[in-house]
Amino acid sequence: MKKKAGSTTPDRPDAIHIVELLQRRKLTDNAFEIELTRPPSFEFKAGQTIRFIHESIERYYSLVSTPDDPTLTLCVYHVPRGRFSPLLAKAEIGAAFRLTGPHGYFTFNPSKRPPVFVATGAGVAPFVSMGRCGVADFIILHEVETARDLYYQDLFRKIASNYIPCLLAPSEADLASPGTYHGNAAGYLKGNLPPASYDFYLCGERDMTRAVTLLADEHFPGSYVFKEVFF
Image 1 (cartoon, one colour):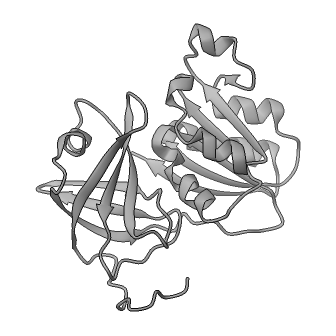
Image 2 (image 1 turned 90 degrees about the vertical axis):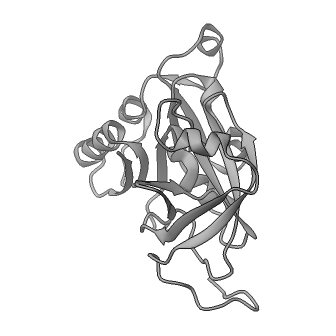
Image 3 (image 1 turned 120 degrees about the vertical axis):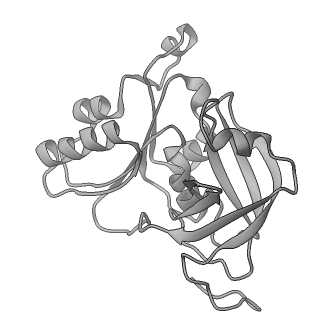
């Protein structure tokens, strides 16, 4: 990445930054975006995460912004009884937070193998950042409960070669909607992905990443698997 004019030397990933909440945008009933100020020395690659530190709580979130954006934007899944997402959901504009980063190695590495992105819920976030950075013509599966949870679908429908919503609990309207798969991502891949070698990028819940990793080993020999697991 080219260095921005006037930028300072990047800090170590464990350096603590103080940022402020600029705005919050609702995505669905269960998810929202938050936009934060960006420290002058903070540089990252699409797909990387930041770590919030609040009292005894630490939480990692993938960035949906691009390395060239002037602010940092995150996708947050709201867990009403959780310890941290309710704080982000209620914080006042201007509230200060401590974070470190960037963290992780879940970045896009082009190869001759077709890329297949698989996400559950907010695990779609790193693929948003990659797509906004120019990565395109990939297959992407987004595993969610219903079509109401398909945030960022407008972006993926424009840049992906194939966008497959995988609905675990489709509503009656979802059942009549074309272009959706009613089941998990592993089930779709097993029955519909043509035999070949792929680069699988997996981000989300452990059950999904485990199932797709096993599937890649058994049905798509020569494939590579890169994953970011939610705990």
